[in-house]
Image (spheres, rainbow, N blue to C red):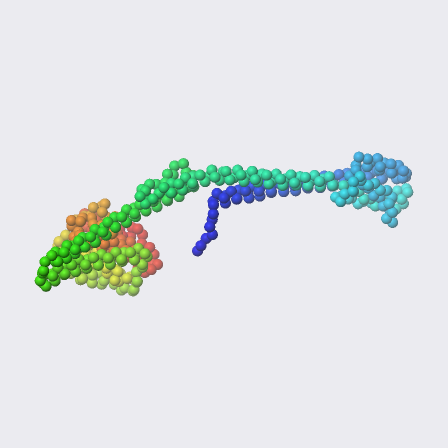
Length: 454
């Protein structure tokens, strides 16, 4: 599943900070404008109510009610200095009884309608319309809106610039890590990233990266050792073939002598073919090949057949084989037979003469089995146990029969264990060596714990 490219982290953070600054300042400015607008409206309503009460008082005074000239005079005096106010008194038939207009025509008006009791010169109640001009407040609100908008934009710009600088400073440790990783190469995998002075959030990443470097360095060393081992294993039989062939060609030889040379060369060629086939099998295993499982009723029967196949070598070494336990499941029989054969052959080479080799088949965990071959002999050095399943590893080259065995047998056992969802294991103490593997009875039957082989 493809993902869109993230782009620059610093640019994204800067944009987010800018948007956050603009959003925050906008919210504050809108809040200030709304509160100011509500205060203006409340003040206008209060002022209009006060003026309405004063006008009512003037209209109900006895002197004003009886004399229209006095009433007009008092109303004119009242509106002096109040250019924002205007008053209209209308009779029921719509005619104007009194009118006072403000100094400036405006469309922003607030009005109060109320009834006025009958006057001496107006026997019927009058309708009063008191108008308050709010244009100044609206102009002030517009100026406030422009000021707040400019302040929000300027504040967001300053905040964005500051955020950009802070992001650059905050990402400096990341740039330093990039420089450190840029200096890494195949010949400097022993180096580690310097986590001192780094942010706390980067410390787990640095630790994981350093662990990865350690594993890569080890894998690289193993690859170099593997290449050297391959070259060594192939060089010896090739040198033997070349030498014997050159020797055979130096002078005329009879048919029997040439047949003997060719037979010897054929053995070396078969050994070379065996190494190549084993390496090809391990390569396929590394690429994720899995076991082709079939239902198997008895692993003990399979182990017995493997033991019979090694009868000649066992008799020559003076050894006996016993099979203990049994189990059923789904396994790749050819692969499992090959793994058992390698384990029995390995035990045959290192077991003390006159002893027995025991093949134990037992339950390792729910859904998992343990198959182990036990022999009595020289205890393997503890430092060699973790490397027994490495390719071309020989703990004791003097005893291992390097000419016949090329050191891939236990590596193949480990590969077969992994193809069955298990793992190999080995332990050696007090003259007893146990080497085996764990297996899942069927695909998805669970995973044997790391200590299942113990």
